[in-house]
Amino acid sequence: MTVKVQHRRFTVKEYAKMGDAGIFAPGERVELLEGKIIAVSPQNPRHARRISRLTTLFVGLFGQTHEIRVQLPLTLSKFSEPEPDFALVSFQASDDAWRHPVGADLVLEISDSTLSLDRNKKARIYAQAGIADYWILNMAKKRLEVRRAPGEEGYSNLTLLTPGQTISPLAFPDVNLQVADLLGNT
Image (cartoon, rainbow, N blue to C red; front, top):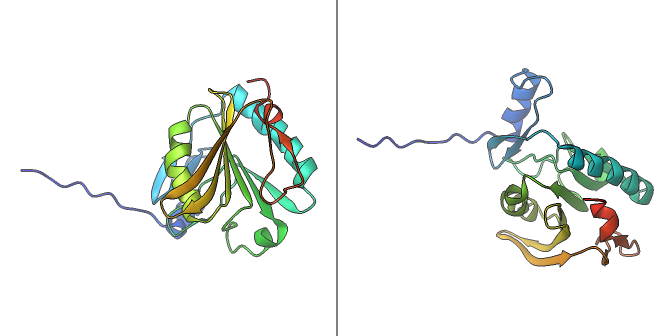
């Protein structure tokens, strides 16, 4: 006899109640992705350095108009509340949020051990939420993967950039960022 295993999807509201009830261990890092609670791996030193350095860079460049959300939740659907490494959220969008912001002008993931998750599941979630500018810092290949033109199935535009090239966020076309500066000494 075959038993059919059914998975139960959690909503953002249920996930919030679990957090409020103390179900997750203190300091435990988790995300809600498509109704599944995903454990987030601990940061390695290289990842932590990139977070620190990019926080300084982004606050200096975008901090007058945007909240620089570092590993903080975005409520993107009834079933998804990811915590991207970076999200640039306008102050108004952040202030108007009932729980967490529901979008961002730019989302960036620093990817060393989570590349498959960032390219697939997270890219789909961000695209379905209409995030127009999604970047992955691919630490292993030393390149920036820029995804744009979101749709229900994902992003229809992918550009791969390497050190020596520049990129401008869609929300800040006058700001030119050096890919080498984003990657640092990887």
